[in-house]
Image (cartoon, rainbow, N blue to C red; front, side, top):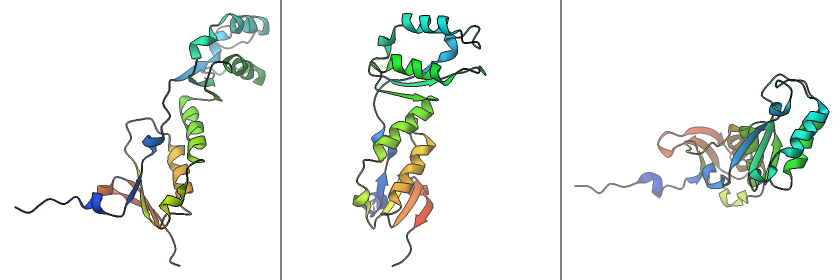
Length: 169
């Protein structure tokens, strides 16, 4: 019987797996409409009082996204005031959804990687993920890899989709 050879493992392909860079930690979304009258009307005195009485320590070392789930029209300072209350506790605070939060985290992480290790190499950006890697992270990874990689593919080695091939020099 002939020995089975893993051609993918023996290939020159470098796998760039965004899951490897997924930051550990709890992600929370705070809906500020919970402090509005009937979810729509911000009454400043009541709003400030509710924020003052809220237990912000529950967000200790968590990643927090601040958003409003209703169509309420409210002043910008309302979200900023919530962020100010969170600042002593949260690891990171963004305006938006959990996906916006993850995108922001990946922007920080991916900007600090030394991509020169991928110089002149074929790279596959691993597609299937068990963690919620946002699309923005895949786009950023491809943009950062492009100046270095000989080629960039997306997916799995058995079914990769070509994205980029450097021009011959």
